[in-house]
Image (cartoon, rainbow, N blue to C red; front, top):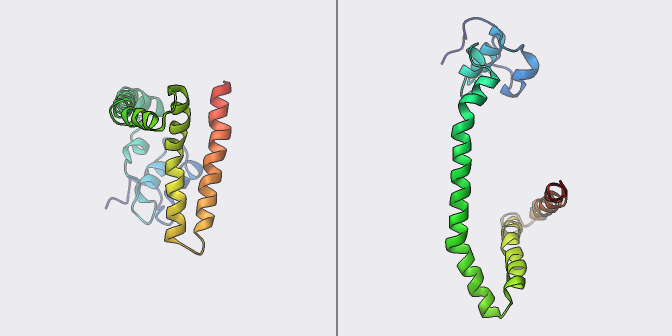
Amino acid sequence: GDSGGGGGKDYSSYSCDGIFDLTEPYSVDRCSYSRTCNGGEGLYVTTAFCDPRLSVRGWLLVLSPPLLLWLVTLFRMLGTTAEDYFSPSLEMFSLKMGLPPRFAGVTLLALGNGAADVSATVSAFVLDPDKGYLMSLGALTGAGMFVGTVVAGVVVV
């Protein structure tokens, strides 16, 4: 592998996480660090740290359009999947249970939203009967705190 980076020190004994703390921006040391950290493995894309022509702003300008297009594509796929698969099954369940549409959306949608948490909790208990409860409590508490803080904060804003 490439361990030089055109000069600079050998950072093979350092973790790649410290690249911003231990080196100066656009320096030979940062380039060497990106190529030799983690026991010589280095980072996946060293060009971002070794080519002085590419700044953070340059990367943002280059990557923003494709990432924005990818985000739009993912949301469209999510919407069509929900429309084609989730909505018909939600409608069928509400008809079988005799729920009015406004209650069906609130009740069954909440059950569907919590299904992942229930399956993760059951999986934690099954895979580790002795300490699985710690993982399940952490997952449920984290999910509840996320809804209570982030979602409520976004709704308020």
